[in-house]
Length: 483
Image 1: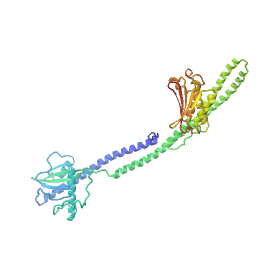
Image 2 (image 1 turned 180 degrees about the vertical axis):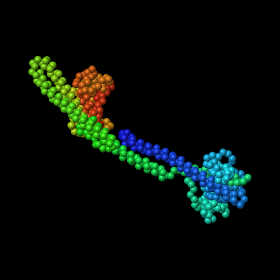
Image 3 (image 1 turned 45 degrees about the vertical axis):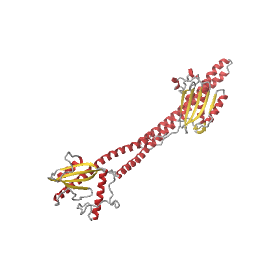
Image 4 (image 1 turned 60 degrees about the vertical axis):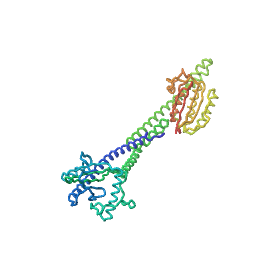
């Protein structure tokens, strides 16, 4: 399953988004803190100024200062003048302490007490009702709200049928600030006002942050493509080169570092192609040159009258011819000029098993269902023959099985022989290695050729012992291999 986080482009985009998100988070934290501090200072300063101004008006008011409501300063503030303070004495801190100190400073050091507590839902509803009623009363008497004039009559009850004011949203928490200012020996100005507990961050700030993250992600995507696509082309070219293709070049594009890597790969591929061509040419020449003296030796051996001596000469000659032929096949394995084709390798297995049975080898085919694979047919047929002959000659008979698997196809050669010790199993695919004790004789090139063909198709060859006995040699071919 494709995972974008395993690619360079995916990781670059993820790191970019994570870095931008972290930076925005830190910026938001600082913004919220600074914004809250600024709003708190504004609220505290304006509240202290209103209370100090109210205290100065009460001092100059000629009317008796009793416990009744004297003046309606505004819908968000109420006060009384009483003989006792609304706030007990005690330590004051936070907003209450700062407001009290500011009011006392503006009133030339007058004693001030203050406290802050959360508003309960019922208290908040009562404040909302009072605020609406006061606004309606101001409007009916022609007093613009907020002027600070006294009402000629108490405000009427709130009429829910005629709402004229939209209250603050209920989810916004509010606190009640209570301040007591000493106006005389037995006179205290008791003030109560609502203070919001903070406002949420404006939505446009959040939208701007998401927009910047999106813009940077798009930019990172295009940068990643500039780097990732040339690297993907380079990986694809390396894979094709590993499968034995000859003319393999990767486009030289992208940043300078990637261009240098692509150019270096192209130069390496060209040198490797020339070197392999020289090696194959040398092997072909040796094979051709060896055939001439071996043919001459065979003709001379045929003229010997002594049959025993003749057989002693012909046997090593036959072995030399087989060794030369298989060495040449190993040099060509996985690197032929054959064009890949989509064929039914199950039908190929059935045909091969029938041919081997005609030659006296015990080989059966288990390939009833069609298995289509893109491959070089002659090379796959050669690898399949090598597996089947090994199973028949060294394992007491074999079964050639072809089946599909997720992402490709599998060619299996199963035998009933003694198997191979684990210590020797990995060496079976080495050229000229023969596990004589376990498998008998041979040139030791059959499995090496099969492995080279499998890898030339982008697949692999595996070997494992069967239970209770026998050996299983498998060629795993990927889907559309060898293309």
